[in-house]
Length: 106
Image 1 (spheres, rainbow, N blue to C red):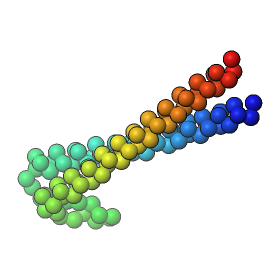
Image 2: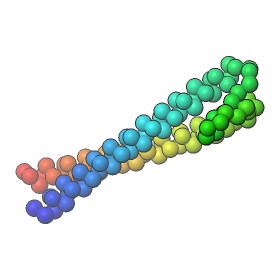
Image 3: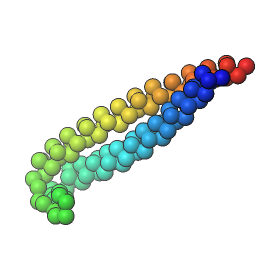
Image 4: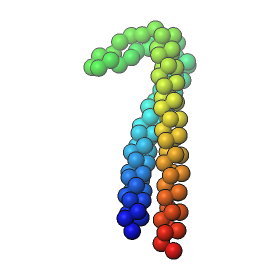
């Protein structure tokens, strides 16, 4: 019975971790969408671009801002992919634990 309790606790911990990963992933995906919208705006806008730094807005060269946004986009993509890999591993472990628990019950 102790072994089954440990498995149930691990399963609960996995569910908590999955919930936290989902919140992180949604945050990064939201930032990614903002980034992509900014890149589209810069591409279609030939006027002066600005970047918000803290409480001020600073004029910035369109090409420099585009490069900065492209770099940030790459980082955000990597973070989302990393979270998805962690999610998949946790889901697989959760499925294995569920099978073990059900097998132990029978």
